[in-house]
Every structure is written in C-alpha cells, then in structure tokens.
Length: 342
Ligand code: AMP
Ligand code: MG
Image 1 (cartoon, rainbow, N blue to C red):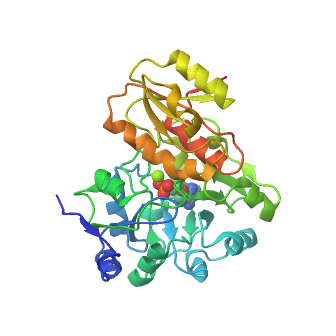
Image 2 (image 1 turned 135 degrees about the horizontal axis):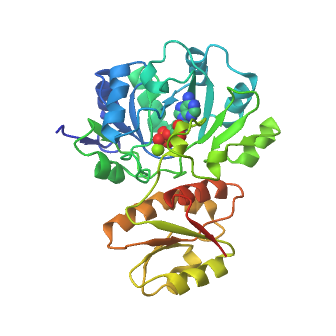
C-alpha cells in the first residue's frame, strides 16, 4: 500500500510544487476545486490516467473530465471548437461548467473511453489552476471518491476514501460549490444538458437559447444502456443505507417522513425541520431557501450517515429551479430514484 501525503499549502509553501512533481512522475493527486475534490493525473499520459480508474474502482467506460488552467488550452484538446462552446467558455469560465466537444488526437484512449469527444473544464479554484500550471499539462480528474460513494468536499473526505491508494492530497479547505460541474454537450446537433451543476440551466439558456435535457436527469438508466454521459447510468453518490426521497411541499414532506420513519432511521432535512424527527438521526443540509448552502452540505451529510447505524434514510429535496436542479439530482441519484411524491 502506498503512503498518501497530506499537502497543506497554508503551512508548506512547496505544497503545490510537490503535488505537481508527483503528477509529472505519473502519480495521482487529490486536487481541490470549487465544485468537489478531484483525483488528478496527467491527461496526456494513458498509464497515469489508468491509475485513477484503479484508485476509484471506476467502471472502464466512464470517461474523465480534462482540467485546464487557461481557456486557450481548449484549442489543443479540441481541433474545431464549436461556436456555442466558445460562447459558454467566455461566459462561465473559470467556473463549474464542463464542455463536451470533439476530441483531439493527443488525448489518450484512457481519458475518453472510446468516445470521440472530450469533457473540458477550466476550474475557478486558485489551487487547482496553480497545480495545473505547475504540472505543465492538462489534468484528467474525476471526483475523488470511491466509485459509487458520495463525492468529497474536504481533504478529510478524500483521505477517508483514498488513503493508501493515491500519492497525495492537496488540502484546499472545503469546496465552495459542493456539487460537481454542470456537463453540457456541444458535440451534437443541439446543446444538451447531461448533468446539472454549479452553472444553472437558466444560465445556460441565457447564453444559448434552448438547451435539451438528457433523460438521465430524470430516470434510472439501465446498466447496458449506451448514454451520452456514461457516468449517469451508474449508482452514484450513495451512502450505505438505502435512501428514499420525499418530494413536495416541505411541510407535507416532513409530515410524511415523521409518519413513516422508524426510530433510528436517518433523515436529511432542511434546517427549519431540525427538531421534527426526535427519534431519528438528523442531518440538516441548509435552510429551505438557501440552495447554495444545500449544495455545499449535501455530500457531507450523505457521507456522515455512514458513521452511524441508520438502516434507511429519508430525504427532503428542493424543487428543480436554479441550483435546486443539481441538488435534487444528487439526492435522487443517491436514492436510485426511489421517490415518494406528497
Ligand atoms: P466525475 O468526474 O466523476 O464527476 O464524472 C464526470 C462526468 O462527466 C461523468 O458523468 C462522465 O460520464 C461525464 N463525461 C466525461 N467525459 C465525457 C464525454 N466525453 N462525453 C460525455 N460525458 C462525459
Ligand atoms: Mg463522480
């Protein structure tokens, strides 16, 4: 088992250089970004990228996002950037938006898993950009969790899943957005949202006009399915105990959960309902109206249930507007789309 070093830029001025050195040697490093932590390796080195799949236990057909430090690097990863991709990059980079575009030949097979497209993102987190610059190459990075588990939003979460599996974690503190990037494909006739995230559907529509929604946003996709974002078909973000989402007016959802939860069950709820489930293990993920707080806290709350003895989890969930679409998507995926409408 390899030793995983925790690199602390606040106390060690060389932390970024050390992390970059490991990446140059073909190793995998936990990288803070504004969305969630990533598992980063040299995107142009197929053997380094293969180590990411090994560390996560990630299915071999689920491609990785390539992270760049400068928007002009998009041109080296994509031979002909679609005009709509350029407009989105201009509007939302650096930031939580991944653009799926036709891929250049320099990108190894391991990154794209047989697709003729690549996902590219310019993160806003200063340490992520510093690491990409210091490494001198684009970095392939999926979320830094064991495959299927909730994503990681602190360096402690990353160590929990990855200790002994990767060379180091660069600690950048808790992530500011908390859910993964929005993924939109520009490689087909019409722009299509594959994964909701920190850049909202309404923001995309503001730039592009209409944006189609992939069906993976709303339903469980069969394991054998060929889908636009292969990652969308896998069980995702899931704590160990099964989750049931209760959708509807928060009052009504709380009443339903209160009526159905057994003593000792877990409840993920808005802050306003903290005291409603006295016999349960309660995790609050933000005030009802504070979608940004919910996005920051949702994975931490889902992970925290794994340190308890809960046998099932009930979850409130925001409506699909704005950032709510991304938060609700993560909760519904954690539940395998097991939903009760009240
Ligand atoms: P993760 O980095 O673990 O959050 O997962 C990255 C997401 O982006 C997964 O859902 C992938 O399937 C998706 N993705 C990455 N590259 C591509 C691509 N070339 N085409 C479609 N989806 C992609
Ligand atoms: Mg992931």
